[in-house]
Length: 110
Ligand SMILES: [Zn+2]
Image (cartoon, rainbow, N blue to C red; front, top):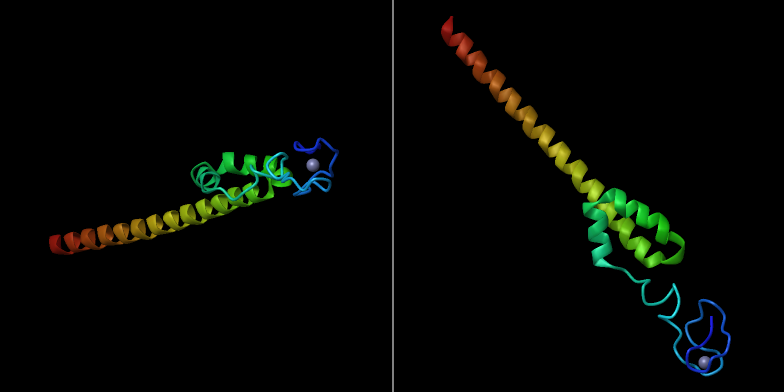
């Protein structure tokens, strides 16, 4: 890539121009768009499949954004698993109470 200040060829991924010292961050893939993003984490949290696909896309080019995606993805999966466990427990308790009350009903009929 070329420095936008002096126009000289620079190594890809350098933060500043070796010739004039101008900032190069933001002009390549490792710059402006590569930062941790709450919105990407949230996207991945709500839509785990979309988040995981984006993670695969950004894994090499935007590691920080990919990190946000995987954090949202894992958090989303954990919370959904917890919700399922809680629902199963509540369901079990409800079934138990139903069985107990029908037992009482059955006993009172005898
Ligand atoms: Zn320069």
